[in-house]
Image 1 (cartoon, rainbow, N blue to C red):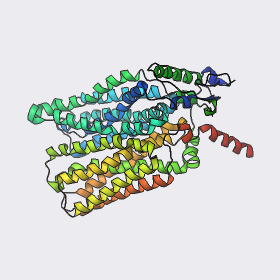
Image 2 (cartoon, rainbow, N blue to C red; image 1 turned 90 degrees about the horizontal axis):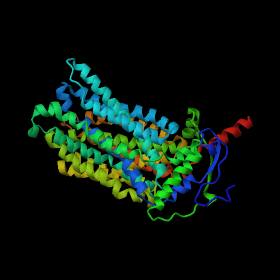
Image 3 (cartoon, rainbow, N blue to C red; image 1 turned 135 degrees about the vertical axis):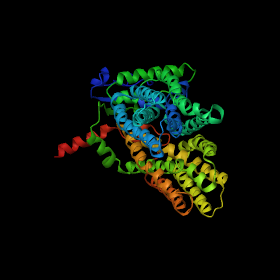
Image 4 (cartoon, rainbow, N blue to C red; image 1 turned 90 degrees about the vertical axis):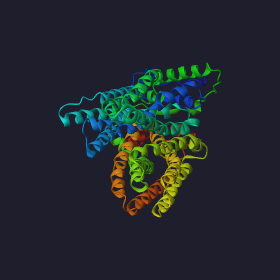
Length: 515
């Protein structure tokens, strides 16, 4: 009976769900509405700090991977150095796919603890890789540890983005998620600064750098991670995940604790009427044929939007990020040892963009802002390409154009992760993130090869100019496709953005009866 229930508490449940057994059953719940009406509180800051660090760690790792201190000790050539980065990216793809499915099946909390622990172990072990007498033995051991670290970070993406979206109220979800995703560049800047310290042969001497400096840099991430893993122990399981897996009783208890914590800060909570309750079927796992139906039959336009946004931003970022140093060296005669200094304004622009523009994704709207950020970055890149070909830029002005373009592109790229986590059913959210992330990484991995070949020895600006126009066009396509086919998800409850799988199952049942 729901008419006798306190309006701030959830209505009764039925079947297995009420017992919290985790078995499949039909439930009716106010859990999503109760979470979304919460005002901003210390609990939400704990979510931001405890879960958002994943992006900082990835940005840090990418910079650490790009260092070459280990290359000297292990006598690695350019191909082997490049392969070390590739192994890390492959680890991310494998980790995202494997742990993304586990996150939907076993829960967000189990996975964001496990994946962080895996990253900590992989990165720390890479820092103590033995220098064997056999050249390949050392390299293979290093690659194994880099793969493990990448798998941990890839798994983080799936579990973390799901948990953040499910715990942050809808009024704040967009700009909070975008700001967190943008902190990747804070980690990248931290990694660049660490490389300048630990790999500074002028200060410590080349022998120390080649034998110890690079090893110490691998421990920066694990030190941060050990602090954060303690904080994560106090972050609850997503009540939305509990609700959809038959643990409705536990979901209500979790929300009760969150509400008490918020009320203890002197904040008043508005009643939640029974008319905001949702009805759904709990699931232990989702078969692949249901996933295929979700992506290609129920939401084909959303699948197009998610794939387009993720692929285009990944291609552009990998194209410019991994080739900017080569462009500075070959076309502007910047010494290799000095290119790192040009990275800092580039990283700052990427970091500030999501922080400044993020709120507009909630107020002005997702589709409009994606068109502005993707399209605006594409226009700026096209203008810079024209000036580059005309030899009208120098290293500083070229960097300024990159900063301006990626001030916009960074907010758009962060919105891509937000989008794929919003527009598909809660029951498959982690898997959706993992699939689109993996596809984007595969396409993005081609960009450094293509743009590196276009730069060549710097004797001809024509090929890379075409590459810059290509990057511009790709971002314009991403913005236009999203504007036309995207979803207005701003400040809407997740369950209002996309229906739960219950409706899909009902459709299957009707089809079966018709046959």
